[in-house]
Amino acid sequence: MAGVLGISLSGLLAAQQALETTGHNIANVNTDGYSRQRVDMAPKESQFSGDGFVGQGVTASISRVYDKLVSDQLVSSTSTFSESAIFSGLATQVDNLVSNKSTNLSPALTSFFNAANDVANDPTSLPVRQIMIAKADSIAQKFNLMSNQLEDISKQTNVHISNTVDEINAYAQNIAYLNDKISLKYSRSNTGQLPNDLMDQRDLLISKIAEKVNVSSLPQTDGGVNVFMANGQSLVLGKNASSVSVNITGSDGTDIVIDMDGLDITQQISSGELSGIIKFKEQMLNPAQQNIGLLAAGVAVKINEIHQAGFDLQGNPGQDLFSINAPQVVPSSNNVGVISVNYDAASMNQLMPSDYQLSYDGVQFSLTRLTDNTVTTFQSQPPTTIDGPGFKIDASDTTLSAGDTFLIQPTLKAAGTFKSIITDPLMIAASSSLNQLPGDNQNALTMANAGNLSFLLNGRTTFNDLNGNFIAQIGSQTNAAKINDAAQEALFNAAKTTKESFSGVNLDEEAANLIKYKQSYEAAAQAISVSNSLFDTLIQATRS
Image (cartoon, rainbow, N blue to C red; front, side, top):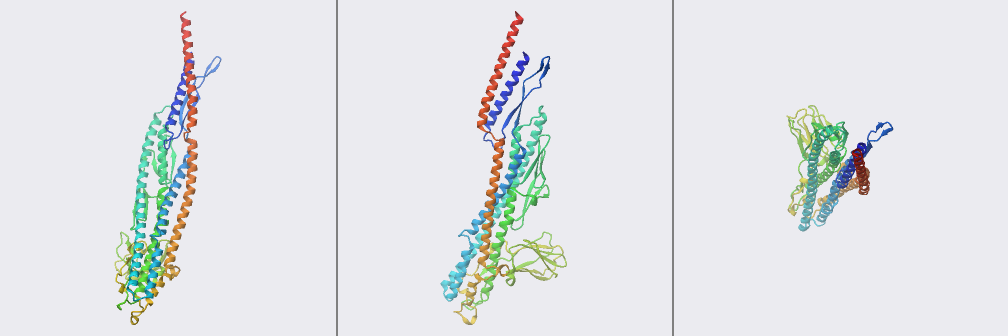
């Protein structure tokens, strides 16, 4: 009779475990990252008797419904979708900025050249000249606004990168903590059971990291998991977490280095928000700043060149109509000598939207265009003047030494320094000859026609064409980013649905389980009652 009682008790306890697990599933139906749990039942080892093997009841163990392949697919899709989503969002910001009527440069440029043409039509009219000055101011304001907006986006992305790295470190520390906790509980378990809820929490943290950067995981025999990011760099090993840091340098904040324990892993980051932001800055934001700067430098230098060739209403030679800072020079920290750089109107058509690096090896200078690594060498030594593409380099400092390097940025910050400097309408140099004042309009006509000159990019592009091509390029990139984002979102949702259908809680199924396990519990309880009755009958029989 004791065997019947024991068997019935095992069934009762198994049914109770199943009911508790079902209730736990129902309670966590909306818990993020929760994997459905189930009770796995198996018969206890039977015992041999003279009449055969007699069953000993049931054993029950709780496991989570989990598949690593499905989970890894979701982690991978999360990283890819996060990258495309943030790139698309940031690209849309730039697209809205450059194509917006209130910030678009094309109307301002067209209005300025039209105003110059109006001056040519009536060169002695002060009101017409004043309008031309106002249109010049409008160009400056548009360049400054565009530059400031792009700079703000750059600063925002830099803050996002720093915050993302901090989040990765926090998640990694929590995973290491959970690894330690899970391993400890596993070592104390006599049945080899793992703490399912803690493992779900850890998997959720891995998914959170996957939103930020591409990661992979490898389970360990002690219940822990090792987490790797980029191309195999260990982020978490057991209960130890590595530290990720970011170094954002350069005057423009575009030099981004992601570092893990002293190792530069920037180029190994291939997905996640970090990758999306870095790609956005490299592929869209930096080129946008460079192109706007090229346009600003081209307008300032070319219009100033034309204006200086004319004469104003007072017979004075024309002065600069616009001002723009000289190209920015960033010396290497261990340089000995110095250089200075200024725009060169004669070669302005050769200027490209790019940064340049000047290196001196003690024998010759090398000028590298950083967008495509095109190198031009100059077989000269200090003191010398180097004719660059659109700028002249003054290398007259005799202390220049081998190993000195300089980053030259002729276009990156140019739009932000663009200014209109003439305020007196009398100073508009509309005349081309001192002897033909005041009715001569030839210089004003030359300025008006400058908008149609194929002046930039080796004489292939006008001012308006450059701006139009730039806007079209931004629009094309943004559209491609949106299409890619939609595709990645669909893949992410499919992976998420697969994971939820496999590991998620189905309330209808759990409700059916409640009825099933309730009946099992009641039947086991009835079996115990029968066993107890039989035992009482046996006791009464021995007393009689």
